[in-house]
Image (cartoon, rainbow, N blue to C red; front, side):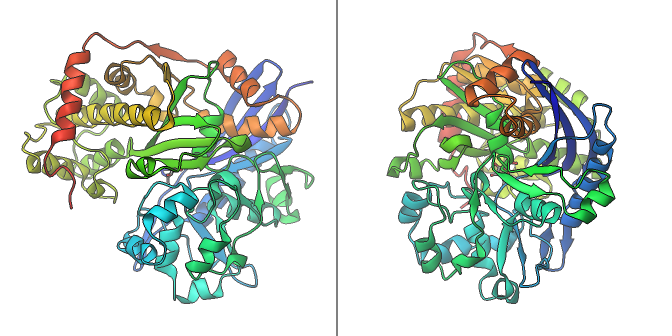
Length: 495
Ligand code: LRH
């Protein structure tokens, strides 16, 4: 078949973009046509996403896509981060700006939910790792309030954006699986759970799967973008991490992946969820992937630690450019200070360098003495968290791992890739950087009949995208010692 073009609207925690993907039998090229900032806004009642600005950014991107040299896209797909949502009232109006998952209104809400459904039972149903911001805990914070009472539908962010583009209402299943309201075994909303939590099951839209049609553009969207009103919007793996995992360039079965951006999502692709008590205790998640696969992984506080540090330094008038900081970190003395990247105090926006120094002092270590040392501390600690997570995943899922695919923006960070190979003792294949947008485009291309199954999509990525290989260095003993040290840090977790 002749190559065709698809548009991916791909929104991350700090920026969004519209990307055109050209797909043919041995072709997969991306062109970014528009990039825009994603700047959360703090209102008196909490931290919000500026979802109208994000939607506007998508429209601006589609306007450029309409004038692309290869002709307008055959279809459009939307992916974003997980768990967050907007609610519509009976008139279809948006009820308030969606909350940011880093907002503190979920503090204490897990206890509220657990008093109705215990954490062990919740895990056996949803298979979801405990993160304070899971949708179920956000809804506990909204319970009893006027907006939830007025809500007729709850739409996860990509579903909301697709609704504004097309008028259609649906819940895409890879993202639905991150809510804590979804049954990991059956792949359906857990209505029993909703009942027990006092939530009206009717606010959850019917599920749709990646590849399903989501509609065509509303007339005013077509008019304002210059795209034909017949342009299809296709359901993609709308959870960005699920799209990224689609585009992991794996050609052998025994791989692990790390989707590394604001978060590091490290884990395995499985056929069935692991819902054991050991898995719950280790806080692994069973999110849905494409074609009924399970993304068995753990969230690790990823480049957020570095990004938030850079933001702090910039505000303080200190150097904040990425490359020089990484170069300095590369030269810094190894294994001076280590942190648990997942300590709860690192979740909220704020002065990350100060929090990292406090963590080190509290745990009886020296605080990193300068910017290079602090970045070194972050990178080594992330590499150790990658190691710990993948080793635990292999045991809990009873699988061998022979190599790691590290995809996403973090794959550009050579220091992190090298440290991850060293820490894990496994080869790291880095790239593609644009895994999420590629996964978005590929699912659309598959629906259009241009590419075959998941294995074929991955072969196409492996054959067309630039990948770099990092072989573990010969310093295993030093990493073993560092791993033992971080495990043993007393008081490492703020209680
Ligand atoms: C990464 C991500 C991750 C979720 C988090 C909220 O962008 O989607 O998979 O846990 O954001």
